[in-house]
Length: 351
Ligand SMILES: *Cc1c(COP(=O)(O)O)cnc(C)c1O
Image 1 (cartoon, rainbow, N blue to C red):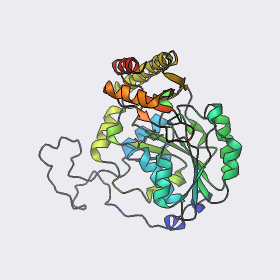
Image 2 (tube, helix red, strand yellow):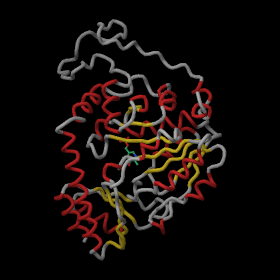
Image 3 (cartoon, protein in one colour):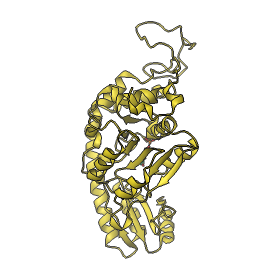
Image 4 (cartoon, rainbow, N blue to C red):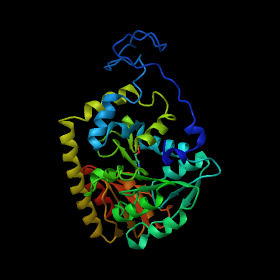
């Protein structure tokens, strides 16, 4: 046990985990109070009458090779949302500890922190410098009590990558006292590698990945946390024993192989090309006052009249996201890149 466990909630560090029914697939199961027959119409491979394997070995090994880490460094769950919630519950004592985050950013970090009763410390990104990290302000605010720092790169909703150099500086300064969590939900769309290679030298680094975006499996609910095995072990004490539904496991295994993986690559390329086309068209239009560069599958656009833009999109039967309530985003809307036909319809409506 190292400081990675010492800074966790002591109740969790000392918790004896629930002992789930033994997983011994070579034997027949009369130990988990399951029904011996499948439901009518159950076409799953394993049978939905059976509890799924906790942290399924095959899925974990597939995710480990997909993300280029050791299997002991992978925790899989119902989307990265579940990983955010687990981190806050394991590391933050209600009323005592805090998380730091850099708005405008993904909303789940502060929601999970508030549910747990953790304090939320906000250090805004610098809008006047392309929404880059305010490294010195962040370090100044990361006093004792901050257990988790959440960063999102590429960031939602601004679309930009955060500087790897700044992240490495912050990482070095957090050693011994807090974890730095980098949410890479959109990294597949970026022209930059994942920061996962820094997990070995920096055990305080946690990376979140998801099958919801580039892999097109948002409905399956499958995400992964990549971290030092000691962190994975701690979080495993808290994640429900049968966290991942069998249908999700089977779908993920089926879709994480050729030819599906080649199609994923192909679609990422098409999506990037559409992102560039939509961005250029909006830049040429007087309706948009600013189109921020994006490394994700969406773009942040400031409009002269955002209400008019929202209404025009709706008139074309398209929803785009109003993000004006977030700090620094007074006139901005977030547009997810769709099919070429949807994008053209949207451009026609907006310009
Ligand atoms: C969409 C998104 C996720 C994905 O969440 P899942 O629970 O894996 O679907 C995570 N982080 C950010 C920043 C996102 O925008």
